[in-house]
Amino acid sequence: MPKYVGFAIGGEDHPVWADPKTAEEAMARYGEWDEKLRAQGRMVSGAGLNETARVLRRKEDDVLVSDGPFAEASEVVGGWAMIEAADYDEAVRIFSDHPHLEFGPLEVREVVLE
Image (cartoon, rainbow, N blue to C red; front, side, top):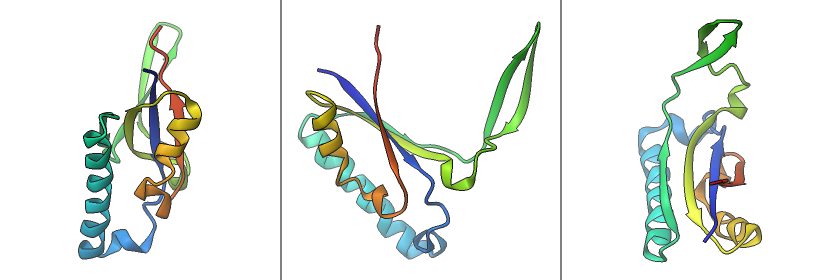
């Protein structure tokens, strides 16, 4: 069955994350969504991402390493979830109730395994 990844983009500036109690409640909703998909046999994997990153670029024979990411904060990927779905439409339907949509966009891409 094809695999799809949903990337949780931005949302760090949403007021819910400023308060530890509401942030914990929001994270619980993420966990509940994951568990629901695990019970359905759809969840493959997923994780939050640390805000620290390094960007590597090749320049001739050297690899340059810099701190990053340098995208707008609203464009930073904060986590991902990989699911199995019959097709793109079903993947979009599955991700349409992801709790991250309350805080920011979710980008869905098919995983290419070839």
